[in-house]
Amino acid sequence: MKMLRFRSPSMRSVDQEVVCTVRLLDDQETCCSIQRDTKGQFLLDHVCNHYNLLEKDYFGIRYVDPDKQRHWLDPNKSVVRQMKSAQQPYTMCFRVKFYPNEPMKIKEELTRYLLYQQLKRDIYHGRLLCPFTEAAYLGACIVQAELGDHDPEEQPSDYIRDFKLFPKQTLKLEKKIMSLHKNELRGQHAALAELNMLQRAHSLDTYGVDPHPCKDFTGSTAFLGFTAIGFVVFQGNKRIHLLKWADVSKLKFEGKTFYVIGIQKEKKLVLTFHTTTPAACKHLWKCGVENQAFYKCSKSSQIKTVSSSNIFFKGSRFRYSGKVAKEVIEASSKIQRDPPQVLRIQFGHSRSFYSLSHKNLIMNMEPLVPALPSDCAGVKDSAPLCPIEGCPFLSDSEHRPEEATDDLQSAGVTMETTNIQRQTPKTGAQEEEEEEEEGGGASLTISELNYSPCPSILPTPVEDSQGGVSSLSSSPVQSPALLLRELHADPDIQAQLEAERERDRAYERTRLAARSRVGGVLSLLSSNQRVNACLLSGARLLAVVVGVLLVTVPTLLLLLESDLDVSFLHEIRQTPEFEQFHYEYYCPLRRWVLCRVSAAMDDLWSD
Image (cartoon, rainbow, N blue to C red; front, side, top):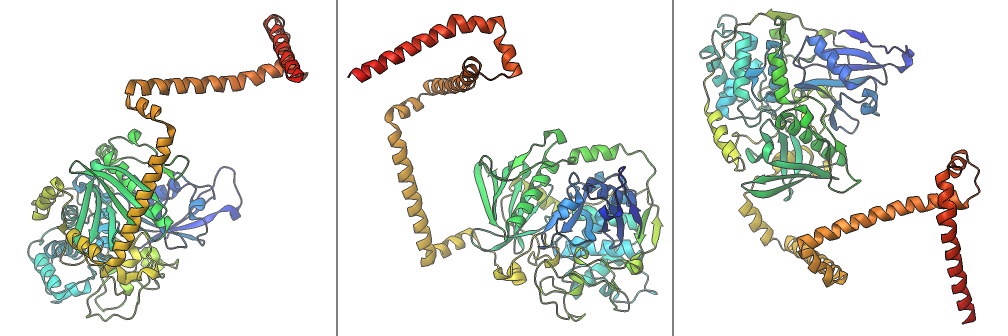
């Protein structure tokens, strides 16, 4: 663990310094001491310098607040202000924030290796869900990258059992992984196996998804995510919505309700989801705004500030301030340096390896309380690992408290892989994805298992009153027709719908009555576009004239009638133009007005 001390030129006292611990993708840690006004970009640069990483725009730093709500560290704001009431020393995690749409366009092997480590975590925690054949291939690539070629003399017959790669790792899956590792992937070095894994993983529907648990309009649990293609929604083992970024017109939230407004098949589409807390809804909205700007815009200068609501002076305003995907790819193509060395974790220290002696891999590290409550009772080694039932190995490293990490400093193995073969066959999953992009709104089965990522890595917590962890897998996926039949069959729901319709009708009657009181003349004029435009221009002119009069009249009265002896007023009164205006125009007008007023008062008294 390295300690870096950062001091501002003002040489503040040591009491103003704050210690930050950043956990890396391989579960190692790096620490630094910052000032209270240090911005988040300093921490991100510190970690990238630790890796010697240039393609840093894909990555970010994430932290968890005391309410178990996750946030991405804003590089343009103070770290201390963002952490707020978090306990010191601050603990954060270095993670992939924007997944590259085409891993082959990544210039350096170091960046690909870090993306490979992130995808290993996604597979391990159930975020990257895929069919059986794809899961077996991904697992075989991981084993090939970490073990190398199969050696029957050194490795037992069931050596795959020592790798915990998936949340549900069955014997059938292990046999398929061993078959691919022994035969198809034999002879591939670590960099090539990692590249093949990235190439296969990026074609999956759950690639790059950071799942946000929400409730839809029926109360069923759904997982929302943002990818390079667009906005996706998962329920059960199906992707029920895919809205491309070009078709998403607006993302907004109000309180706990998140709205996605777009166009699908030339019709306006409004998707509504409900989160557990307003903070979770705002985090979901900010993630969507950032991903849309990163993947959709061609230049960072095209990014606009967006508001969370259409109401004036209400809602949050946010603007993504980083580079976009096209700019990152262009900057990567201009990198002119010798490829840096990639220090890979040794076999016995990899987080995928459970240890050949069936001992705990991560020693001296106890997981924090997960973001979602779960019964973390003892799980036998022979039982299938399920992310919902809870297991000590399914807690993400982001939830571990600070502790000594000297035992985790693993020695690295330098791998020189400058000549990487980039010949990967086009898989059936890629062809299916291309077909689905043409009609992205249809439901698509993504796996034989339900999409249920590990609770401890969800970006937003779920309240206990909503069923906790069990609610994430208990909501069945129903067709729209079946949902409508159930709605029509339930008398309580029918009564609620009828009451809502009655309220809408009463509101419409009130609105029409108020509109009719305005007068038929205005309604007739509003139907004519030319007259309406003239009225609007006249109203604007009247507003400008009234505004000018409200400013000039009090100013003239102050100059002409007041006795204030202020320097600038005295100078104005001494000018020839002002004296001419006073004696030739204002005084006669004043006398005339006074005569008229006195005559009117006399007539009033005489009557």
